[in-house]
Image 1 (cartoon, rainbow, N blue to C red):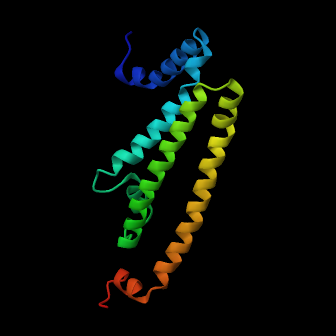
Image 2: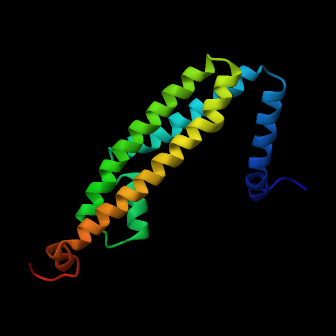
Image 3: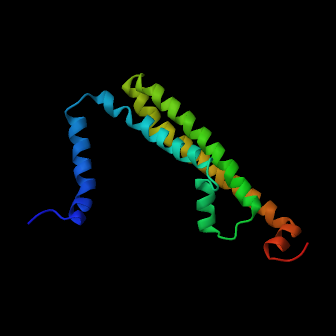
Length: 151
């Protein structure tokens, strides 16, 4: 009775999790302090690299939610991708700096402040998006264009 490919794929996350736990258990805490900068850099890489594609990651999400999104939405979401890339890069730099600070500062920033900033940023963006969307919908020419009418 051997291991099938499906069984290995099913067990891979658990094996990886136990490997990471063992790594951090038998090594110095300082390695664990690098997790937030690595994660933040990963988020930055996703946003930044998508800027070089036809559709950014945020545009793809917007199109999945609203397949007939107009050029205003596409322009807004492309610009929003620039903003998120900048925000995540700054978050990466700050979290990297905390690696060299005390454990209290590291824990405060990476366990609270960083999450608070991301949540606040998301809430502000959500409000701005609603205001912008109302502005787009208030323009009769845009409404007619969206509905396939001649302007």
